[in-house]
Image (cartoon, rainbow, N blue to C red; front, side):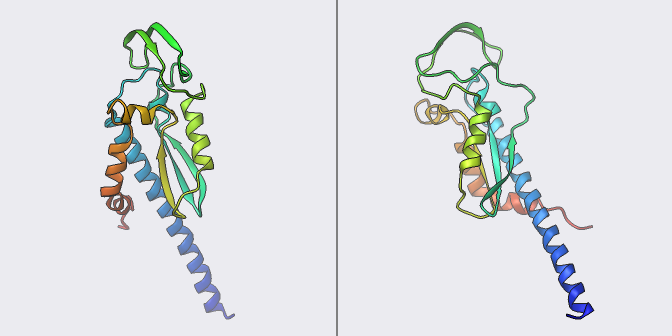
Length: 176
């Protein structure tokens, strides 16, 4: 190999590394935008705060989880997830509203939503080698959507399907 070939290979390797870094940053930018969308379009009330504080996404490269990012709202949940049949009364919920009584209808692991999100995303195998996957860590998110008709992540999923490609392309910074 002559000196020119070596320089070209080294330059190409540097370019590919920079491009991969920029792609990763673009995916993470889109993931954060979708988390913000999910927070803004949420229609549920926050009892413990676990659904909201477990909104997260995983960024995958080569089918492996590279980044786990939680929605940053600055306020932790006020307690662990309630389990089916558990009743709480006369308390201040996550949103600051007084609740007289609440009985849980869904069985959960009784843990923290953010831990459940991480466990799910770290065990998930995406269909695309480079991708983002958004989730909540509450077993009752589906119940909120299907049984109560409240938006948790459906609107955000639809937004990603309609505009994800444009969001991704717009996340790249232009060279000046």
